[in-house]
Image 1 (cartoon, one colour):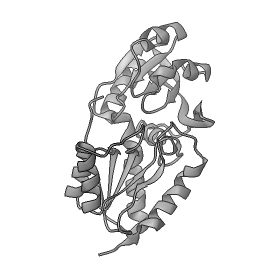
Image 2: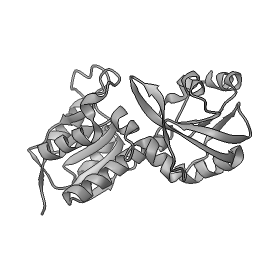
Image 3: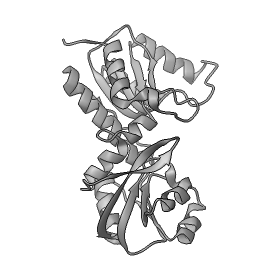
Length: 253
C-alpha cells in the first residue's frame, strides 16, 4: 500500500492553492484543520465537512478528507453531543481534514469557477469579481441565448437553475462566481456583465437584478461548488499515486 506523509500533502496544497496569500471570511481556517497520525493512503473529497461527510469518509476508508467548507466558521465549543461524535470519529478513524475556501474558488485551473466555465465550454476566461483583494470568479465574452444558457446550465449542474431575467435575451458578457454571491449583484454589474451565474441569492436580488438590467442564474450553492474539490482530489491522486473518491452529500440548496 502506498502511503504519503500528511505533512507533505498539506504543504503541497498550501503552495498549489497559495493558501497563505488569501484573506478569507473570519473562521474559515484554510489549510490543514485536523491532523491524523501522520500518513495518508486514501483521499476523499466533499463540499462540506460535517458529521455526515465524516461518516462517508470513514466508510470509504479515507485518512484525508478534502473539503471546500471546513469545520470552523464560528466559535464551535463546547465539543459535546454531535460535536463530540464528530471529533471522536475523526480521531478513532485517523482521519485528517484539509479545507480550502476562497483559494479554491479562485484557482485558475482547479477552482470552482474555472472548472464550471470549462464544463460550460468557455476557454477564454478573464479574472472577475474582486473580493478581499483577489478576483474570485471568471468572466467570458460569448453570444448565447438566455434560454440556451439555462438549458446548458441544467445539463452541467444536474438541476434547473433559477433565472432572474433582468437583462437581455442574448447573453454576451457572462460572469461566474460559485456559492452565495447573489447578494453582491452590484459588484458583478459594475464589472460589465449582462449575465451573472452564481449559486444562491437573497429574495431582494430579484428586484436588484431588474434594476441593474442583468440576468442572474442561481444554480445552487452546492451544485456550483462540487467542481473544485473534485479537481483537487483528482490532481492530488495523480500527483501522489493515491486512490480517491468524491463523497456526494447534496444539500439541495
